[in-house]
Length: 337
Image 1 (cartoon, rainbow, N blue to C red):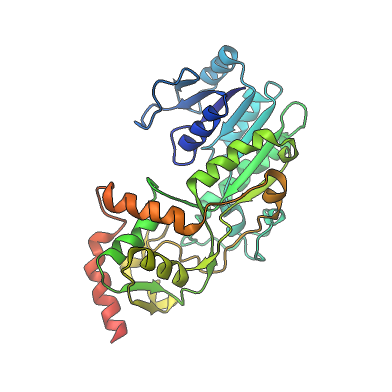
Image 2 (cartoon, rainbow, N blue to C red):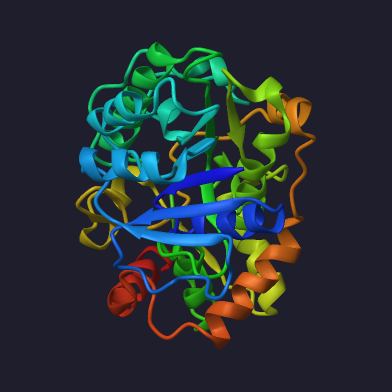
């Protein structure tokens, strides 16, 4: 098949490209050309440069390559999805959209494990510190609404996948490294709240494989599915597991959430600094995706060992807000004492 990937050099999408090529597809990656992460020397891979808002450029590509499938990995605003419908409706056999579990986590109320039919629940009061991204989740909902309104099994067949926190080596968000680097220094860890809310991650290669496998299962047309690991952790359990893998377990010092929220080190515009502090349970049903594509995930220990090794041996830099680590230590020491 001829496959177009819009945003094919990102964390998930670069691995999706590899999977699609391994399956014998011809892949065209449409990118702004700013990323250096490119696969070289494969005759079935073409990089095309342009902005996703450029309707003329995208229409030219469609005429040139006659795509069978389009993956949109980077639609964040409804008008971006509207353009996809305008250009590709009636001209492709599959449209696959990368959504997010944030479409649920901007809701006032959810029931865990969260099922795919909870995506249109009443929005919570606007909350800038939503750890899943308030604007992000709202806009991703709008993107999905555009696509589902246009969905038609014959002339615009849509599938959406909703990944949770995506982790692994080279993660640009460096969420896991926030904790890995602090465990590495051997000093206590400041943990917001009780650390007892449950959450899920997903290994980046498992997420990429799920996107690729959709092509083999027509039953996924017209459906949205959660993408997450089968293992569920509280923040306390997650930190203990990483400490054991690093053979360097750290003392956890918990600070009440309402007190933590007042600390300058806790926040930067858009979200909390401290990752995986989900503020409520956030774990997701995998019944649907397992039924549709025989979905299985890599064990946490296996992929986290690789992630830790990459950060400690290949990554050059610090985690978010590590320059304020000494301030963290002073604060947690005062609470511990």
